Image (cartoon, rainbow, N blue to C red; front, top):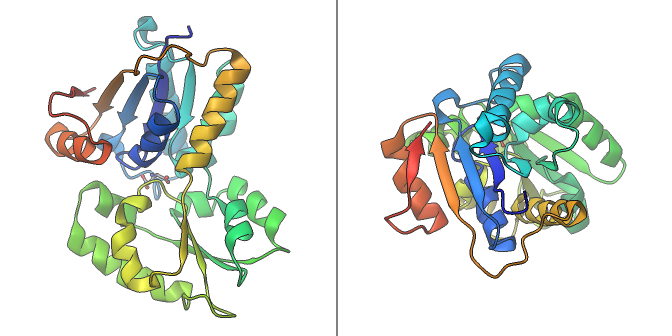
Amino acid sequence: MKNAPIGVFDSGIGGLSILKALRAELPHESFVYIADSGNAPYGEKGDDFVIARSRALTSTLIDQDGHYKVKALVVACNTATAAAVKLLRAEYPNLPLVGVEPALKPAVQLSQTKRIGVMATRGTLESTKFAALKASLADQAEFILQPCDGLAAAIETQNTPKIIALLAEYTPTIGQFGTKNGQIDTLVLGCTHYPFISDLLRVHTGADVHYIDTGEPVARQTRRLLEAAGTLITSPDLGDLQLFTTGDLPSFAPLTKLWLNLPDTAIISKI
Ligand code: DGL
């Protein structure tokens, strides 16, 4: 069990931003990543769809003839976490499970102006889980929420003109960015796809605004859960990586190799 991999899934490539942090924090662990690109995006499809996909991917990672048999699961998708993590925890009570949610708490700590922008999918921002998180911090900062319909899909398909057009539409409605009083000095990237477009976002926010994503805290939480379960690998060997997509392999494979800095020989498969 200790040598079993850690399962990670997202609606597509977004979770690679989490996987990168996981591999940096836990280099001796093995990972199996599934990008559900064939069903992406999740953000505008509603809870029933996202729950069904989350269940199907989890069962692939957990049950399938013991083939992967992961020892822990990271739901590397804010939208899937919001819709399905409670249910997955109930269905797999013995599985160490880490979800991701928009990092509002770290944003409150970092922000001086206490005006914080939150970009995420509609599914995440309209969830009861997110409403509870926001309500718990409502007296500490003002949060300006921006549902970014279409943005994860444009990132997924690497449609740069579309990404640029959507950012030009969404960022002005969040408000004025900057570090002066009344300005938004901190931006929460509440979808795991968004760290990949931070350069394009900078055009709109300027260089001084803090961007907050969840890769590193999620990786540290995963380490804590493995330690608590006694399944953290202690051998010095580097872990393995298996990557799968339910979508188009020729577009997923090169992107993944580039972002994770993998050798050309890395094997990435269609599932
Ligand atoms: N990357 C996912 C998230 O963190 C989902 C984006 C989508 O599929 O809409 O929310």
